[in-house]
Amino acid sequence: MRRVLVLGSTGSIGVQALEVIEREPDLELAGLSCGSRVDEMLAQARAAGVTHTAAAVGGGTVGFDAELAGLMDATAPDVVVNAIVGAAGLRPTLAALERGLPVALANKESLVVGGELVRALRERTGADLHPIDSEHSALWQLLEGIPPERVASVAITASGGPFRGRTADELSDVGVDDALAHPTWSMGAKITIDSATLMNKGLEVIEARHLFDLDDEQIEVVVHPQSIVHALARLTDGALLAHLGAPDMRAPIAHALAWPRPPVPSLSPFDLVGRELTFEEPDTECFRCLALARQAGRDGGTAPAVLNAANEVAVEAFLAGRVRFLDIGALVERALASVPGEPADSLEAVERADAAARDVVRDAVDGRRPGAPSTAGVGA
Ligand code: NDP
Ligand code: MG
View (cartoon, rainbow, N blue to C red):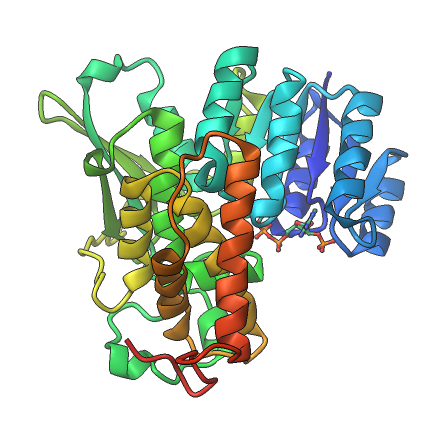
């Protein structure tokens, strides 16, 4: 039996992780954590017969950190699923790796914000990190067994989100409901907005760099509206390998949790006949978040932490109807220009950058600074 601790159990990935644990005969739930939906988490715990739980609500970050550490120690899991959303997931990832516990990682922000810290800890403790993000799971499966020197580059696909093909003009007054209407995936609100701005793909480029030790130029982003091909690998001899599958997150979750044995068969055979698979270049002029993220990744240091924190606050403000869709990119750009970069060599350094970026965006949204955007829009 492999005992699994699920952090962020009340979210989109968390709920699907519980389904996977339920149907995989070798997996057993060890404990749960959530943010604020405590009643839902307790119902999940009762249904699965587990008693170990923790909630972030009310405790503040420090209190929750201690509770999570206690949860990891009390449950002694064989693997930790990190399905928390946002930079709040970084400390739990570090806490698990610190204990030598393998992490099945949905929380891509851990790698965006603290990629260097996570890599150093993995090296020191030897703890495994298995991606749940579908593109990265696909790359993991594609690259397994291929010597790194044979891999020339990789490509990750983006659906393009609900606004694929729109001009900046057409995006100026899109609403929250329009942005939440993702064409192919059903996910939590934050990542759904990130998919609409293409920030998600930018975060995923940084995630892939840390997971597979790749340079920015080795990662291509291609828009593929059908979301059937998740990732591709170009080998040095010109061969191109692709990973295909229906857009269902339970597949990569099961792969990460069952590894190294195969998950129980659960997918109906994928029918190729009659499928149309198309690929386009992303429009980074209109969807600036992708370009901003790639630049932050190339700049390195604390720039990705600034990018991520600014994006989290900007997305929250958009979801609350306080800024417009195109303001998200403008606010992120403002934070990147305002917060000086530092080496990301300590948790304190990345958390300082994260806090400074949040301040810049909050001030801009609240209009406390001269030249701050109004809710009528930031413009370019
Ligand atoms: P959701 O918003 O659906 O769920 C987030 C989970 O995190 C909830 O359980 C929530 O608790 C918990 N949480 C929120 N804030 C905190 C906090 N400060 N401390 C502790 N727990 C917290 O998100 P998703 O499931 O969509 O995404 C989770 C992660 O997986 C993200 O990093 C996302 O990028 C990644 N991912 C998601 C995919 C998807 O299909 N959804 C696909 C690929 C990656 P509560 O509900 O109780 O507030
Ligand atoms: Mg993804």
